[in-house]
Amino acid sequence: MIAFAGNPLNRLSEKRPDTAWIAERLRDPASLILPVWRLQPFMTGGDAALQAGFLRPGAAESLAAPDAPCIFLGLEGARAMFARDISAAENPQHGGPLAGLGEFRELRGAAPLLPAKDLAILGQAKAMIDWHQRHGFCARCGAPSVAADAGYKRVCTVCGTEHFPRTDPAVIMLATQGDACLLGRNKNWPPDFYSALAGFLEPGESIEEAVCRELFEEAGVRAGAVRYYASQPWPFPSQLMIGCFAECESRDLVLDANEIAEAEWFTRERARALLAGALAGRRGPFSVAIAHHLIRAWIQE
Ligand SMILES: [Zn+2]
Image 1 (tube, protein in one colour):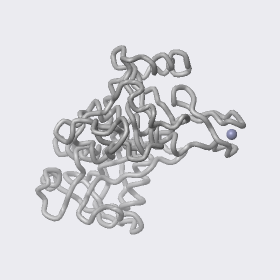
Image 2 (cartoon, rainbow, N blue to C red; image 1 turned 120 degrees about the vertical axis):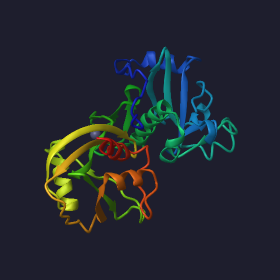
Image 3 (cartoon, rainbow, N blue to C red; image 1 turned 45 degrees about the vertical axis):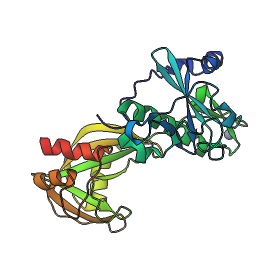
Image 4 (cartoon, rainbow, N blue to C red; image 1 turned 90 degrees about the vertical axis):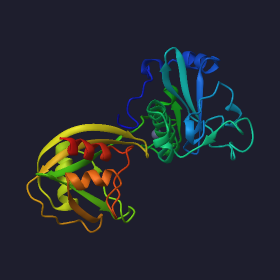
């Protein structure tokens, strides 16, 4: 299972504009609301049994600013699930109604500890609230915008332009050449960390074209056949990672010194040792990252 995918909620998008229905669900004692504080979702259970910290309606309401986004995440069975931004609160896990109930944690660090279903829902909640925090003003005229459609839209208060949550597609590709795969280290990564190369899709570009362009720009290799593997929602802040394999014509590398510090070809045996943490001086992507699954799938081919 790819982390952050597999969200079990019925998003019920057709109900989002029905403000009376949404208000009723928000009052329903059976509904659940996830507080999110400064982009950190609430979690309970501690490291040993970590889970999403959904609460009954009203439990954290006093901590939210009146205009803070409230997102309808969807239905789990008949139960409505929401996320509420309580960033206005000062240190809510140490005082007030939530003190002692759980903790606000950075999602990327907590990801390996969370059940897959919870991680997918928290990713949705975090990405949505992150979008609201970064899009308070109209991109067309600069005036303030307000949330609508249960959090799935913002509308400009002056020109009426509607703005929708964005997802930024990025390609992440495991370049292969015969029985070796190419892993590299971005300049901004730790000195021993190696992973698949990646980059953003540009307007007017297909997935295959973006894969070939990025591989040539970053490593100087020409890719032929590109194969789609799987995709991953990555809410840091709003990417969709599109995982691919790309078979290259040669192993000659010309690295882009501005981006890639090092890159090398790994045999299946070395790639397997890398993922297992058994390769001296090298670390690979952890299992939450789609790069881990790309490498593992290639090893097993
Ligand atoms: Zn506007």
